[in-house]
Length: 220
Image (cartoon, rainbow, N blue to C red; front, side):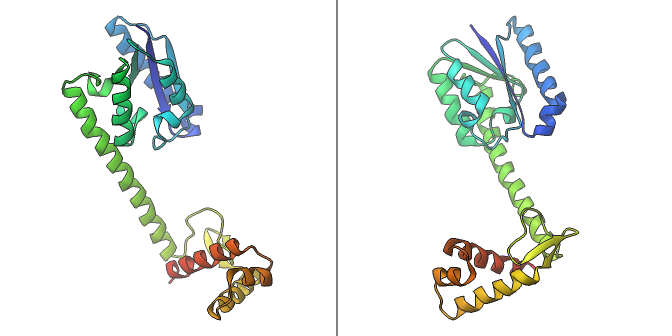
């Protein structure tokens, strides 16, 4: 039997620091020793979000390609490998079908069996997916709150504005162009016609006008 470890951190800073990775490796090595196993290879996923399916991660791909019948994968926690319930359960069934074991240390053992670990694994996978959705919604709420206070939430400033001290400030030249675009659009001009008049592509005009409406709404 071959034994493989899998560890992951989601940011480059954590990967550079290494403490989280080393702690995960130590847990895997310690668990393997208690079982009388030797870890043949450690797959280290550095700076990759858990929202990316395991099979789409660089080291996740290598791991799934390497394992076979009789092999064992060890990971310290469910959320190191999965955040999506569908990804977790799909991968679990694939591993089980080819005779590969999957140990989640936080769940107490091999979750490819039919015992309580698999039940807990199924429940926690769904919980992890729900929590990720809740985090996304909290981020959106924070951005809306900041926008209502005139504080820009980050990223490239929308057309017509500059970011000064964390706030959106009108760019006079771009505001003039934006007003012209909006006026032409209200008059029934096509996106292509507006683009020809402003030196922009039709799709760029559409994005600018769409985003301008969002920015104006959020700043009221």
